[in-house]
Image (cartoon, rainbow, N blue to C red):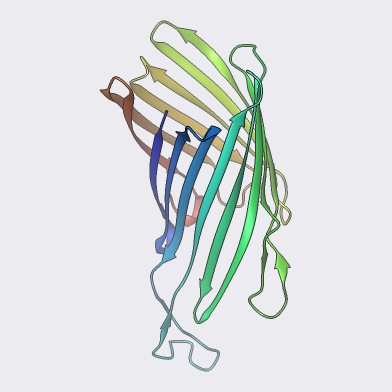
Length: 231
């Protein structure tokens, strides 16, 4: 089934993240192809120096953009895998760099109460150079498990847990659950452990059929970022 996702996030300090993805099948290849685009933007900032802490009269901006191409396929009824190549552009004031990075992931369907085990490696192979000292993109490893908590008539709930290992910080864990009523109304909640400024998160959504083969999902989410506020 063709899928289109649009996502907009408002972070503290007027930082914004926009994301769009489109997944589709083609008669020329088995599996699924996907296209993604991301943009991290912020309002112009006042340029300050040690001698002019109130500003130099000039402004600068910063932001990142990336475009991705994904291919995923089932190899058996229970095992599927995929790979994404990202073309990344980063800008800071008058300096800009470009790089390429890869994500690799797999999902194994255990077959017990809808349990699924997933693993992913992100940002492999990328390298950036802002100050004549090349450095690798931070490779992230994640593993997660989800399953049906209960499924009774129109009531359904899934629970999830995810562990991540960043290269420059301690391990992190995310736990959450999603309840849905008749595949129409969705209620979500979770907790993020091991972060400097992240904790409780929640949200809700609705899904309506627009035709025999299509559905429209609208979701809203909120996360408590401690002293930074909310997002």
